[in-house]
Image (cartoon, rainbow, N blue to C red):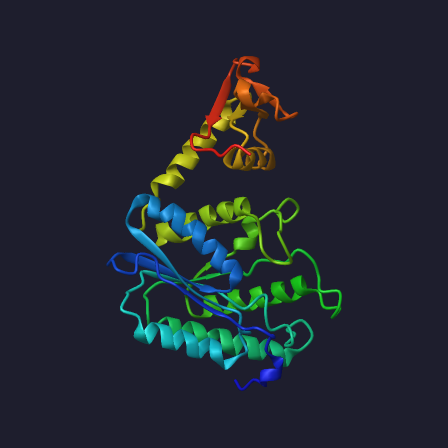
Length: 295
């Protein structure tokens, strides 16, 4: 599909990431944009906890309607020395709004044809192709008057239809995200906690279907949640970077969080913490951040 370069963004970028590039390991790869790039970090964090899997990345800013998308995919897979047990496709949302699927049947046909072309190409390089719905944005683009989220939802409908047509794994990531409480750091990117939550859900969906085992870190998180569900009083020891992150996580997901605990020598620095001897010890769970950083 020929594209006038004037339709491109002022800066276009391309990002490869090969984890443990000097080792032969089982691998998966994510193909997407900058949201996918952030997801890769978290998915890799969990899967490498099991010591067996590497999560690689091919991310780009090009619109899906740009010829460069398919060219870069072909270039990468025809030259890479690695074999991929799973390719996850997560591209086509946050760029290329000049083609509007919610207003034009011709645009729907263009998007459908391009998605089909890319996914058929990817099937050449792995027996397992997964497709994920594209995440929504935090606000509409008021300048153009286009509601990006309506466009993204329409594109997701097309992704689902083409995935079913080609008999591919399809995961509706948006069904797991509560957009009323999710936190954005800009128009389309999320906080680390939100990416972590999404990554667990992604692993839980795709990996059993291709006989991957859960990483140890996933099991540890599940064990922790079981304990959290049974405790009437949950505290976090340490008010540093990890402590603050844990506090946000516990509050966000409705656990019985009570207070952050600090030692006597730090108590004078904060107004919203308690000392260890003030903890209500009946049916209490204290999560300790061993390598925290005090700020």
